[in-house]
Amino acid sequence: MFKRLLFAFLLIMTVGVFSACGSETVDHSAAGETRIITDVWGREVEIPAHVETIVTLGPGATRIAAYLNVLDMIVGAETQTANFNILMDFNPIVHDRFSTLPIVGRGGGSGENNAYVEELILAAPDIVLAAFTPESADELQSQSGIPVVAIRYTSTGLANETFFAATRVFGEAVDKPERAEEVLTHIAAFRADLDRRTADVPDDEKLRVYAGAITFAGQRGFGGTYSNFGPLAAINAYNVADTALEAGFYEVDFEQIVAWDPDIIFLDPGNMRLVNAEYETNPALFRSLRAVQDGRVYAMPAFNFSATNVTYALMNAYFAGTVLFPEQFVDVDMAEKSAEILTFFLGTNTFDIMAEAGLFYGTITIGE
Image 1 (cartoon, rainbow, N blue to C red):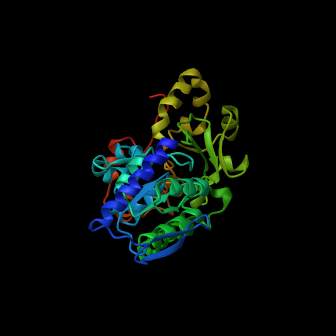
Image 2: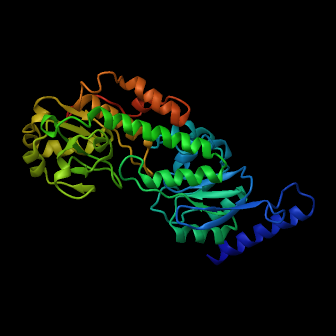
Image 3: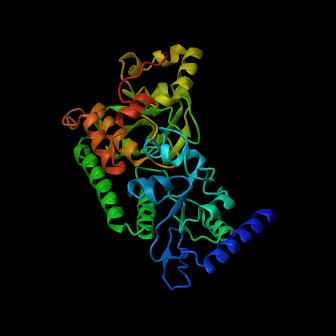
């Protein structure tokens, strides 16, 4: 740690010397061209009045940059985002460029400071937008001398209030408040549309559904499920897992799933290796399920990876709607609806790339 701090100090001093010797670098603070921004933790951070370059760190930070159309402002990448990974919705449109940027952090994490401080200082962004805890944000700001604005949000539900708050802070920091509000307005409109279609359907007329093999802090088998699961809650579905525990992820016993005997099952196609291994161990259990017998097992791609992919979550909700409420979603074509969602948030339609990489919508046969 001492060596890092010493190295950071020397770098900062060197930058100062070059600035004093006629460099075009502008000292915003000295010129009085700063403003104060309050981040999601209530931290007041002094940042340049006009932010031109940024670094995004931590789960979900780069995603918001993609939604706000400011990816071109990023001057340093995380290891996680520089490599291709379809589980992050924005990755197909950034990994080529990010692979040429300096690597300034590990990526992912639970809000801890996992930046590479020396590399971050060399990248010299105007500010860092980090999905960090307040303590980690303070630590990195002290280590680097660069303003760190925290934009951490949680992954429960479908774009919950913490995502709205983080997006607004991000938009204010990069002078894109109008785009931030446009994004949030669209999310609210999609959620309202999903709710409107099913709000009046009586519970006794709803198909009973189980969502399993849900990715949470890693891959999960058939028993990995969620109560108050975002895409299902958005369409007022009858999620059998809601009868068990409070909102959140948990592992359910196979015997409980048999007792529930859902009409419909959704599984993450990315976790079918685990599910198929479980099937080989106890095929009779799976075959006893009504949904398996009727061929009503469907794909629901993971939407939580390095925080919530709002695009994938919305797409999952619409797909679940077409399966569980076919009359109410008769007008929805998944390819068209996905193109609408992806193009608005990311600026391009990556639906075919998703399918090629294993994130698809359709039926699944357990054991194949």
